Length: 534
Image (cartoon, rainbow, N blue to C red; front, side, top):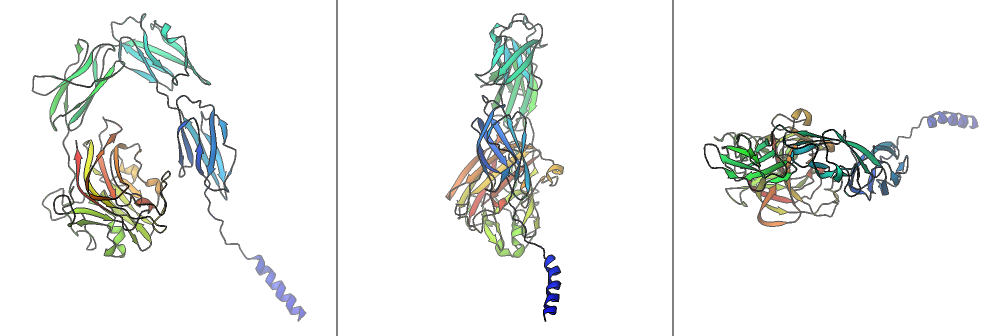
């Protein structure tokens, strides 16, 4: 018996040696939760890109930046070096944060400095070349380069910058002037070039929209500078009111123009003026089916689509609006999240109702958007393609809204963007936003008609209002119940008056964080009579 027992033990020993530990280590992503930088205007932490971007105040010293009160995403996080303290952030620094894995983060700082330089008799605005520490200024052809005065100079942070030679003593600009600029530990040699201009006034820009035009010109500083305009074919000129000047550059916004009309304008500086410059205002484009009066079951018997192939109106027989109904109703028509409401509206026969709900295993926000639904991705999410062709530039969007918010629960909380403190137990929020841009579908993953693809399983694809191809943006957030129909106006903030959009995106949702699968089942948002105003 003893011999048999020994044999059994010998047989078991190799088996014990083959047992693997298949229990995985927990995934704890190492990152920064927050940090304090007393000399900063802002500190932005991007967990996806693993970087911290610090924007310093103008009067700070980028070579001596204090970082304190650092909080990591988990108590177990270890840093490769102690970032708390005073550091030189004139160049980005790297730091490795570790838990079970290593995560390399980048910490960088920028110090925006407003710079300007003007001289007497200047024509136009100076060119400030920060990279090469160079200024180029033009003066009138009659100016004496040996006897000019610097009328304004700021090439470093306010109040802490010293100049050698002293600015008030400089008169002679016949040759390049070298100016020593010192602030903090920074020393720069700036080269100042002053050249004579071949003309005393010239028009530099005419940005004509539908009912407004922006005019810009360069003239002689100190002279009376301005613009005149008139409808082409008429004889009477009108002086533009509200001209703004900076050095020899001046500009104005002329309002109250007619759409699709030819105009001409001139710029003047003193007694000199430009030849007339012609411009044409743009059309007043409308939003198709803006009251959601037209709908059909052209795509599915389970839900309504907001177009009708049988309509005789071209803008109504093709799809412009879409929703997430195609995804939410895959398990049944009872999970429709966007629908017409004929019982509650502002005008016409119906409004649009968006109703958030919980669909079997996932939260779904009621939504509508200009574009098209893409596809579902299992039970984890889906894709949508945003945007429709559009080339005019409205100044605001107006619409009518009602809203009823539910309470977010653990079950309907899927996350939130960085900086949004929303948690289970909070009230839901509805939203409507608009963006104009020149997105390239090759870059943004969509189609020629709907260029921006959003994949709800990949947060890096979520819409960025500050993206490089966004020309204008505006948003309304319903952060409380709106029991009665209320008119809302969303002003559009433009990044440029000269860039023309190629597409428009309008998106609304009864739960603002629907892309994150966060909201409240039962939140409802009605919208009606959406209009663009020019």
